[in-house]
Image (cartoon, rainbow, N blue to C red):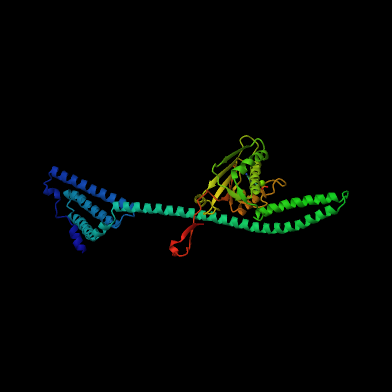
Length: 429
Ligand SMILES: Nc1ncnc2c1ncn2[C@@H]1O[C@H](COP(=O)(O)OP(=O)(O)O)[C@@H](O)[C@H]1O
Ligand SMILES: [Mg+2]
């Protein structure tokens, strides 16, 4: 083997390729320059290929490119050797380089054929673009679904919170109602006995004054119990048909006096307002309570406004308002002020009895709870919309008979003597 190599590399008896070209410079140099250019180009191509493949690990079948690099480099080397053999007869080295080139080219050719179908199966850039577009669409769809889910979750949380609040109000109402009811009975006993003592005492008795004071205290306690019973939806109500606009119109003068001369009181009544069936005194009391709260929340200046509006809420609209029945028409009274408004936690608790943010002695926390209890006991609903610094809007929904809808007429078939039933007379009921 070594012997073969020595023989191969022995160039003693050989003459350079230039001799064949009889050393004609134009042949020598055009061959040399062409081989140099081809060799350099091959080197440059393989370096560029190598640089691409080594930096892009995601290229499919990257190792085949390394085979190309080797094969092209080997081809380049044969051209450089050809330049050398023009002057030096190193044909043994040339043969070895050619053998290496042959191995690299044949191996690459063999490897390449089985790869052809697999390379053809690779997705085209257009297919990839389409897949990408469909993926983008699906991502957008998923984002939308996530957004909808988030919205539903938020709504659910809000509904749960409302339910918790309603249950809390129900529980407080029951407790308050029970206590107020028993307390009222005991108070009746106290008042009846105080009245008896008052009757029995002689006119000049020094005990008359303390008894009167005791009765005044008992009267205040009775008024408080009444407010508690109102919240507990347990006050005696006398519902009658009420034209709300007329009632509020008559009340407005009283309200102007109650809120002070500098606060503007505006009314905006719906002309064709339906009638309601409620206790008119309690309704006046409720609106008065709301107006007093509005006054307390506003500064006494000309930019302060108290607005009272009325409107009809048809059953088809009632469906969309929480707390209202979908088969019932309502009349809505809104009391709107431009006052300090309420932070969220105050608005959430404002209807609770004894909840007040006013200093001791100024607020009892029973105003809104009475309003709430009265409206609920009347089959209606109350809502507060308020934001700190942005005023307050309290809405009272009172059940109404709605527009004068023609009553459905049903007919009864009366048997007529001597006639079959199907021919009976129709009588409107
Ligand atoms: N129009 C309003 N503007 C701002 N806050 C209000 C308004 N109405 C009620 N509130 C808040 O709700 C609380 C409860 O009101 P209410 O039940 O009438 O009791 P009170 O007036 O005795 O405090 C008030 O203390 C106040 O914080
Ligand atoms: Mg109040």
